Amino acid sequence: MIPRKELTEFTDKVKANTIDTVIALSSYVLRDKFDFGAIRINRFIDWFNKFADSISGEWLTFGDIQKVLREEVGIELQIRKNDKDVKINER
Image 1 (cartoon, rainbow, N blue to C red):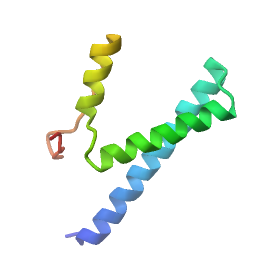
Image 2 (image 1 turned 180 degrees about the vertical axis):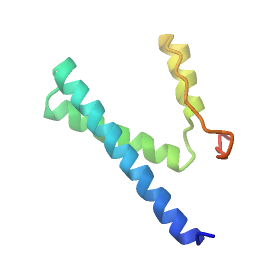
Image 3 (image 1 turned 60 degrees about the vertical axis):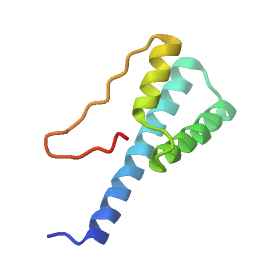
């Protein structure tokens, strides 16, 4: 059995690594394909982190994001889940 503290530390590191990876890839696409410069990329990173914090704080859900994108721009996004053995809090 893994102690709760160690499990929490591990999952926090995985979440941070995932966010850093998504930011790096997104920033590269914005630079390479959309000609964003440092100011716009940094503004994107700041807003990305604010929204990530909102999700962590449970003020915003992926369901909220999916709904806005579907209703406002007609984009259907799916969030892949491993719900066979992982519980996900969707509010």
